[in-house]
Image: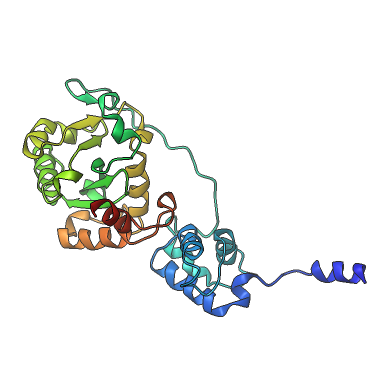
Length: 271
């Protein structure tokens, strides 16, 4: 009897959580079309058991997408994954950009300790994201809540234009959320002193070839590519368009926040 039971358990393919629960499979598919990652879906289900119809791990979701013999989820849903890939691949190491150290700026080593430990909100990381024809937008990510703001740059990324656009965007924030800004070595922030005078926010610059010093911003820029791939002309996007994209990203649960959303995390620190 034990031998027969062992052979029965060995039969492949096996039914998985999604194949046994069509309602859960449909819910997962709906969230994938909203560009939630499998890890965000699994984390949200784990955090909200009373609101869900079951639990499934992110690995089960990936297997359902990439191993079509299992058949629980449609293969075309891979289009909504951040990578758009039809199979999982190891991450390749990113190459540094090779730009040298600039003089006359505040180095990240001088940034207040409260910014490094993410205990106090109001410390931001910033960068430019480019589309077709070097069309730019600016991204600002708050370090403690991962809250994202996007800034349109329809006239280009000349230093005076960047400083003015960032200052106007930062000015809408409460004083408690205006503490520091961390940027890379890009020449678009040459007018950082003008920005600081207008906002009262000092700008700290990362070390050369050190993108991990703005890790939250780098990660969020990767998420943003689901909405703004490199082949698009970003000058065609209005500020309202960019605000709508930021709202959707701020409404997606993040593992680093215990699967709360950045909007939820920001609301908590503003209470």
